[in-house]
Length: 162
Image: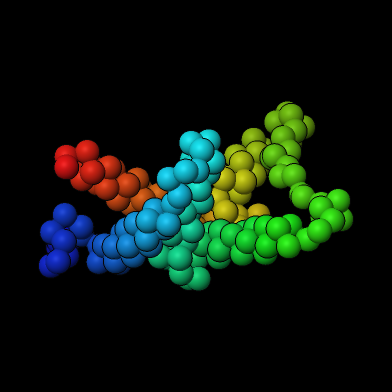
């Protein structure tokens, strides 16, 4: 039987509690910087990016999925900086994200390969991992997404009650 964490009796895993706290602090700081004049369509993307960046930085570089998200954010930030500073926007090409390439499952020897490829596409940084590591990263990623949803729900409940 798991014993509750002394500072947070609802959490039985201290590392999850620490990650939740780190995420909440980083996410709230990012929300403070959100410009109220930003149009709602752009605000959604900004909040989503802040949530991803906050969770990845809360976990740190220990996990491949968090490293992949942080790498993507750094690349996007650098690309945006170059685009904004460049006088000739035609020289800069933006990469379009390619979706998962899906073949006919009958063409594959086992249907499990398709599911594995789908999973690789869902977990950030999952493209170059072995199957066992992919499953481990997926489990951790799901735990962090659950924590993220819980923290964001608590924040929403707090602001709705006041």
